[in-house]
Length: 91
Image 1 (cartoon, rainbow, N blue to C red):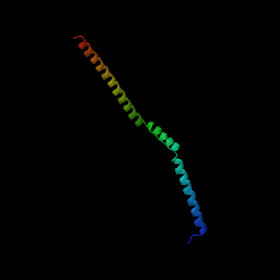
Image 2: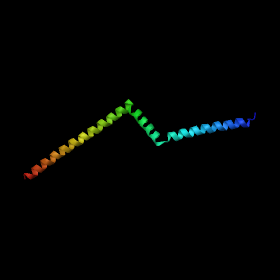
Image 3: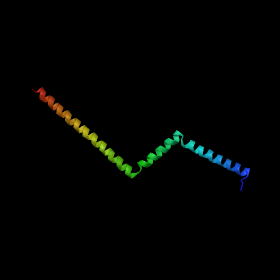
Image 4: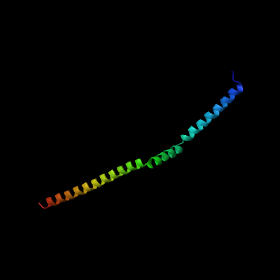
């Protein structure tokens, strides 16, 4: 059964409207501000995940421990150097 010209034109117009709507949606999604908002939303969602929070807490604790160890070692080396300087000065 052959379609009438009016049916074909209606299909073409409907397809054009759908395409225009799709293009508008793509343009809206690709705006920098919208991309930033999406990224912030995804990051916030990830940070609220208990597993991620535990991992971040572990990483934070490791960093604090490493900094503390560095300070302790630095202090110990400084004391040792002062002791060596004192011993050499007394010669």
